[in-house]
Image (cartoon, rainbow, N blue to C red):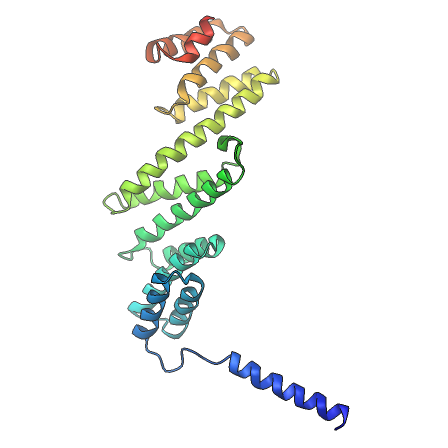
Length: 252
C-alpha cells in the first residue's frame, strides 16, 4: 500500500468521524421538546448543555413563545455556567428586543445579580484584604441594575431581594469612598478630602460610613483653616452620633 493511499484512507476516516461528531442532535425535535430538554439539563445542573439547547431553540424557532423562553433561559444558563459576559450580553439583548415583555423584570434582576456575583467573587477571592479597597465598578453596575428594576417595576416579585442586595452594595460603595478620603488626608490634599467626605454625607445617608465621613470633614476643614465649616460638621456629628467612636476620637 502506497503512502498516498494510506494518507487518503486516514483523511476519509477523519471525515467520517467528523461527520458523526457534528451530527444534528436536534433534528426532528419540536420546540417544546427542545425546551423540555433544556429545562431538564438545568435541573441536572448541566448548564453548558442547557445553554446549547436554548441556543438551538432560539435559532430553530426564532418566533413565538418559545423564542422568548429560549432567550430568558439562555441568560440563566450562561449565568449558572459562570459565563458572566455572555449572560450580561443576553440580558441586554432581551431587554432591548422585549422592553414590554411580562418577564423583562427578570432580565433586569439577572443583570443586577450577575454583576453582584462578579463583585462578590472578585472581592472574597482576595481575602483578607478589605473588599472596600477593590474596584467598585461591578458593585456600581449591580446597584444601578437593581435600582432600575425597582424604578421600572416597583411591584415585581424580585424587588425585595434587590433591595436587600442594594443595602450591601451601598455600604460597600460608601466604604470605598472613605478609603479615597483617607488617601487624600494622608497626602495633605485636604480640600479634596473634605469634598469627597461631603459627597458621602449627601449621597450615602443612613450608611455606617456617615460618622467617619463627618469626622474626616472636621479634620480636613480644620487643616484648611475653615473653622466654621469644621464646627458645622462637628455639630452634625455630635447631634446625630453622640456615642460614636469617631466623635470620641476627635475629643481625645
